[in-house]
Image (cartoon, rainbow, N blue to C red; front, side):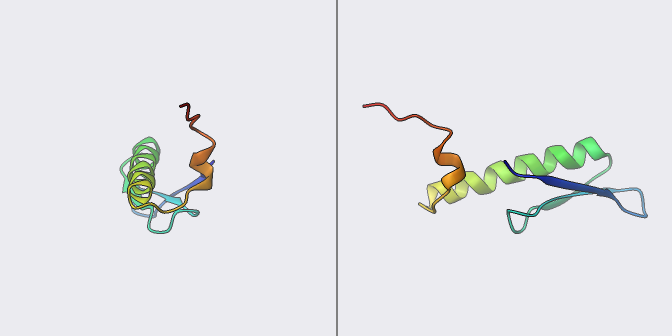
Length: 67
């Protein structure tokens, strides 16, 4: 499970960051928008890592592969 840290900036924007996935930091006009953007970007990064053959032990437990 990935934790999203959310904080409101002084200018009113919201920032959401996934500390376990370097580079996942997004802004949104609302807390909910920032969280959605962080989730979407995180999924794209994880999919790219899978496509490139990088190990993702957290994802291995999601799928059951049958013959």
